[in-house]
Image (cartoon, rainbow, N blue to C red; front, side, top):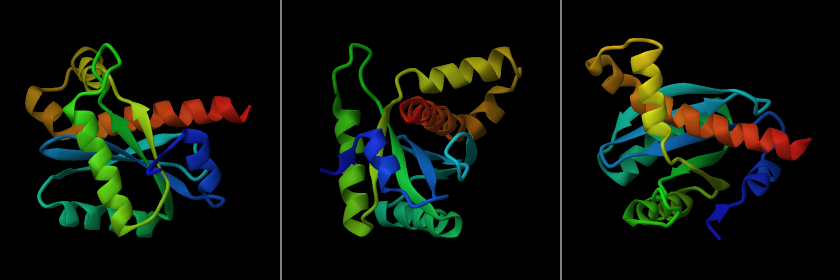
Length: 157
């Protein structure tokens, strides 16, 4: 199976390896990275989607540079918990990625992640619309990855 349970992703990691969190949009990919003890997620960058291979190559650069051992993909379930076309697109991304590099991939429910981050940027930070557009995807990826890391921390206890 291409997509693993979170605890299986964690079990597949070598000591001190990081996780990369991805918010897969149709036009961009927001990227976040964990620390080496899998407790804190930090925003990295947003890449504009082009061709899958080019996008994957940028991810490979980050993976190799930072000793990343697995991916957490935001799964865009519908509000009622069902899967729509965007979920299949995320699964296709996972399959295509694993065809290029075999590494553990887990998913995390991303419902409302972008709107939660946007609400924070508007209400707490008072950021302009233009600036929000520049950071929203990588912050949504951070929100997704932090949720998964928090769940892994609870599982470990």
